[in-house]
Amino acid sequence: MRKFTFFIVLLLSSFTVFGTTIYDIQYNTTIPGASHTYPSPLAGTQVSTEGIVSGIGFTGGKYVITEGSGAWKGIFVNDPAHTPALGDKVSLTGTVTETGGFTELSQITSYSVINSGNEIPAATPVNPADLQGYPNYPGEAYEGVLVKVTNVKVTLVQDNDIFYVALVSQATPTCQIKDGFFPSDHTWSGVVLNQIWTEITGIVYYSSPNPPQYRINPRNDADMIPQADINTVSLTINNVVARKGETAEVNVMVSRLMESWNLKKYSFTVGFNKRILRFADADNNGTISPFAPELSLSDNEDAVTVTYEGQQPLVSDTNNGVLIKLLFKTLSYGSSPLDLTAGTLNDSIQINLLTDGSITVPITKRIAWLSIYNNDYNKKNIFNPWLNQKITIEYGCYQQQGQTGSKAILRIYDVQGRLVATPINKIISASNGIEYYIWDGRDKNKNLLPIGIYYCHLEIINRTTGNSDTAVQPIVVAAELK
Image 1 (cartoon, one colour):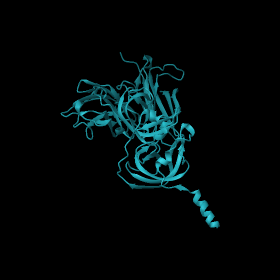
Image 2 (cartoon, one colour; image 1 turned 45 degrees about the horizontal axis):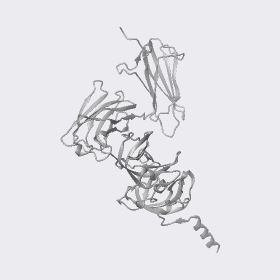
Image 3 (tube, helix red, strand yellow; image 1 turned 45 degrees about the vertical axis):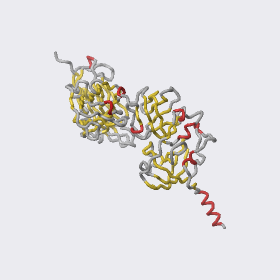
Image 4 (cartoon, one colour; image 1 turned 90 degrees about the vertical axis):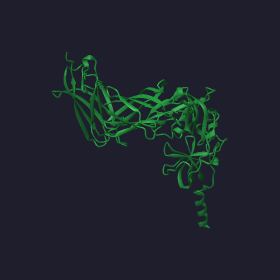
């Protein structure tokens, strides 16, 4: 009898609800919880369920499974240990968890793929009014559900990673569009106020700022279809991280282009920092341009003009199709903007929506990095503070993830070795390990230094080990010769 009682207690302590539908996990319209939400009636319970994977790569390693179209039929799975593919039908066991008012499955103890290549259930049509939080809670029904809004207009762009849309015919209510399925450094490019989108598809995630919001998270660029308008074509350059000495490839992306527009020509100019980059070439492989364009460097070799003319109309079926790829040789550590200007189509149609990109070359080895320059590339480390000229002192080191930032000390000495200024004494916080200081040629007492040669000494101190690295470069305070 004691053994039987122990077995019953053990069975109850590890109780799992088998064959639970996603709908049963999510559905709740009567019992409110914290953060203006309705928590799952099975919160804290271990359940076994199954569904088709409709979204992957969400922030924190989450993916989404769904059992069909409609309210209450999708759920996020917090499961970094597994990497399903879109269209996989999976069976899993996990615990129903409420995190800040958001329902998800976590602590996954069993996972298997039933089959692959399934069609993802169609997105459920909703209006921004359906995704409201407090006080009416309609958005709760679409938590984890693949939805779409149609014929909406951008009403606000916030911090480049969230924008709000409302129906074209209305100013309110609005719903948020967020980039949870995109890389952590993603920003919405080519999204501008009053822009009209034919369709935006994504999976709803709950966030609890004030007020709470149910946000649509597109899974990729194909989930976002802007209104096809020849007068609102946009060009966007992506942000790239590359190693010093490599050839970096950047995509110049274009919004939807219709065949009926008969666009056979384009031209644009990209400016860059030639101290960090040298333009190498353009590549049309894998782009919507049938062959390579003509390229023209500026006299200063710090800008390239790209000109294309073909026989067939250029067509881009999705937003942010790749128009052309540009190749840059990385010469130095640092970050160079890629400044888009002067975009035209068919010689006469101006491209007004231009979003710049960048190439960042982080420091990848243990050194004290020091580079001194001014805006005149022909006089790298020479300036005259008596004419209000300034000079840029760039410094940095390798930033290792998980370690405290290194300390940088910049000291200026005269030719006798006397310390005249200490412009920098701080912790390096830049993610790429590189920061800069614009020096006006003044000493520690704010007096202008006389003409002569000075030495800039950089010391980088590793705050974890105490080790230090140094670098020294001259700075010339000079007057123009008559």
